Image (cartoon, rainbow, N blue to C red):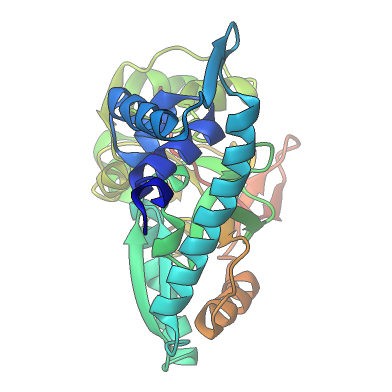
Length: 329
């Protein structure tokens, strides 16, 4: 191929597509695990090759030029088609292989327990679990389906559509029976803040609920807890709750088995309806292989876990599906 007809380097095209989609060199760098300056250099190399600017800055930030917008539409389609065809080629002849993407917490506390039932029903399907904390950082070429907590009023992760596995969920405060045996009963919400340890997630995503928001949304008086254990891993704090180290907020469906079997119990009777849902994420514009189709039918049919009783304002108990999100004080 003559030099003048050579295509731009793939890394320049990926950098341009991400920057145009996000409207930001910084966010494009985060997605591609590159620095902002590296993205800028690759865009400059592409602009030099094309002989025209692709971006311009205005008071609202970065936006594509008319030429850049035209080029973006083409590059986005080409990269998507290339990724989809690459995925099809890699999996051709292997319709019974399934890769599931999910967070470490969901993988260890919910999915791993249910996969036994799926594997018993579908012994011919090979499974692989890919743990990625943030669904917005998923590489679409690396997995077939995802399972994540998802806010309905938020934009779906790029290239993915979300379908609720649980349609109704509550956020509740739980602890282990061993914690209450060691530190005494929790009399009310005010007593918990003054005399008990709250397990607090740091570096949380925007879809997670904080202890403060939970209290205030339920009309409870809030003040910073006297005792807390903080970590940047919700999975670690779940294990701390099992070990009797404090009280944690949770989507009760995620830990529904542990609650139903008494390994965790409600620390307070209050329950806050979740603003999001535990959802199945499906890549768009891609043929779903046989394994993905069978898992989709199975998980949407068998997803719910035992319900946790929910106290109503009049003191009665009503059965209702629940939920669990990570949090910070």
